[in-house]
Length: 142
Image (cartoon, rainbow, N blue to C red; front, side, top):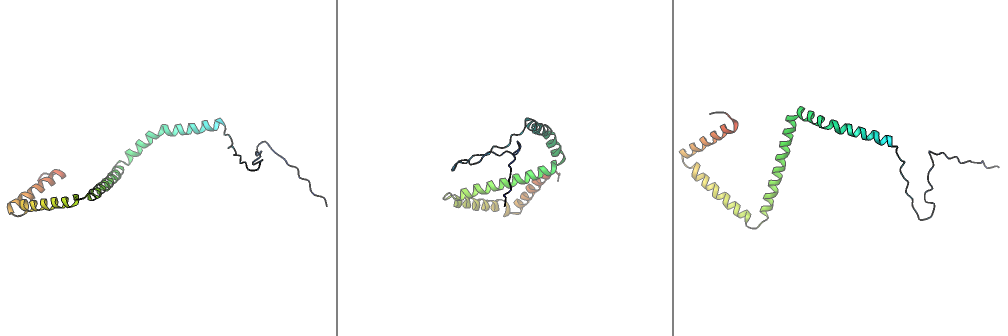
């Protein structure tokens, strides 16, 4: 029986460098070089995108101003609450600070009850101050 003869054909496009021609060495394949025109095309696309980006962002903000401001305020409030809780947790770790704050809170509560809640005239004064504050915040005259 005859063995079929195989001829090896190579083309310029599919030549593969000889990898690991020596034992124990590893050679790296170089990525195919892209032409300068392709890079220029990508650069033009990126520059046109960056040129229209401020106009696009401005129109997007003008269109969705109210929801964006609402989301920003909600996120800002969440961050503020987290920071406040972290500060309070850090203060609670300091010895004698937590009991001192408790005593200050008890003392202020006792003063508030004595000042505003024991007599009818002072309760009326407190309700007047609360309604005045409400009208100032809401913007309506009483």
